Image 1 (cartoon, rainbow, N blue to C red):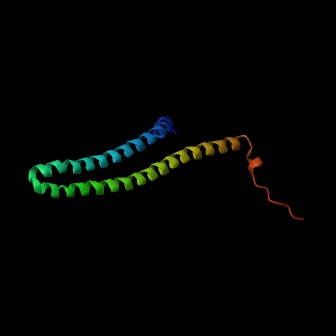
Image 2: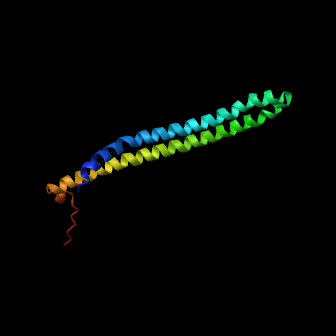
Image 3: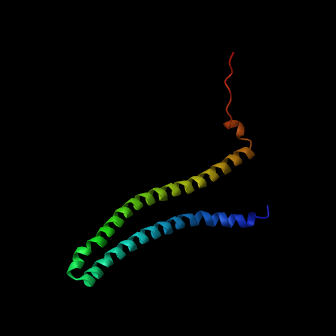
Length: 124
């Protein structure tokens, strides 16, 4: 009972912080993948400069690595979109359930539960 004044602001903050946490997580995953691709591509001029003519052949390895990471990024993009959508629906569902429960409690307080009760059929 004494925790109520603390719990109300925490719940309100939690409701507004969840979408921002999802956005930051999505941004970090996308940025991380792009940085890895940039690192692979930055190896190309280094290899060419260090090895001369042989470096042109060796530059294929970082290019293939960047391509592989890019394909992985596409897969991660689909997975992130699914997770983002799923968690957003989950959080919105929690808000709707709480609102629905409060609505039912309001009906119970005013004696409206009889209007929603299932009445069995009478057989003769």
